[in-house]
Length: 109
Image: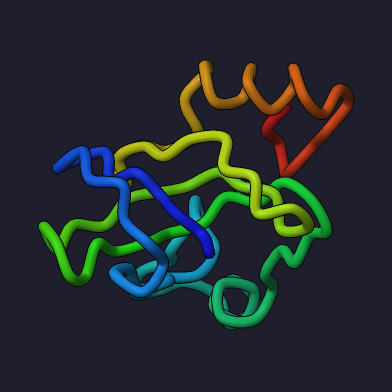
């Protein structure tokens, strides 16, 4: 079972206490955006075999959204962090690089 630490309330929550919210760090386009930008936002998602950044909500806890970095193959969790950031924290990127040299995900390395 996947267990994630909520960075807000500090609880180690099982996946049954959480709600998955899809891919993290998506650029959302507002009014006046092109059809292509909106199409890409809706349909063009990463589906990696390996390191992935995801949004989760502590549904049966504090109710807040957060991000998690994990491996989709092994369910290894590299860390969780606030959803109010534009990119993964440096310490999480370094933890991933330490275990997976040469990994890439979008522009994050």
